[in-house]
Image (tube, rainbow, N blue to C red; front, top):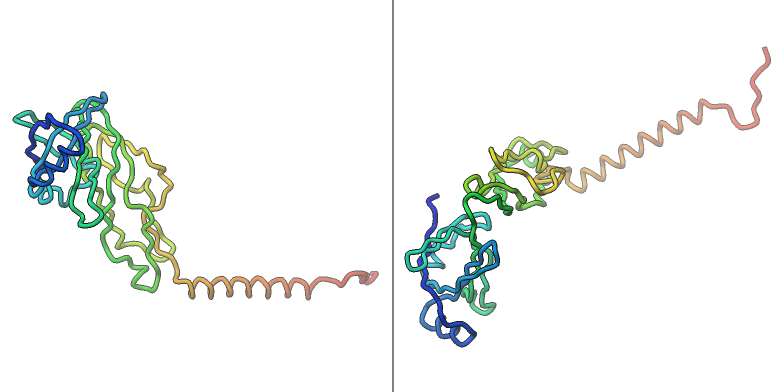
Length: 218
């Protein structure tokens, strides 16, 4: 996917009144924050932003062109109107090409597991992981193929292929995907194990001498 470019303007005036005026004219107030805490106030065309932001994740590096000056950044936060879903404000976080960064990378699960086709249940408790790398090495997303999973098999974070230059920050023991028995089958299996254990215990007790019995003298 080609890098997304947003065209913006410097925003000299601030405050809620100016923000409302911008929204009435089809613009979105926004701020670009740097790693050092500095900020640049800008505004964006609302229609253009809504079109281009589709499909962008927290780990997607975009370019923001502010009157000809380009900033590479993440879209860190979008504030929306709870009534109609329109975007009220956008926060960008600027990156530096030669500085390590930490970011969350989304996991895209693909495939229909063997175990599910055999009656198992799929669980995918994890939707993203945290990594550390240079901006140029940052994956936009990680594809996870789960088609081979059978019942009682799982994929953990440590099993993911991150690529060169990418260091895992998240707990490697976290489960990404798991196929397990359906509840009824699991209960039946547990009952079978309990019955087998009870039968084994009864057999052992039947073969043992009763309390107080004496062994015959030779």
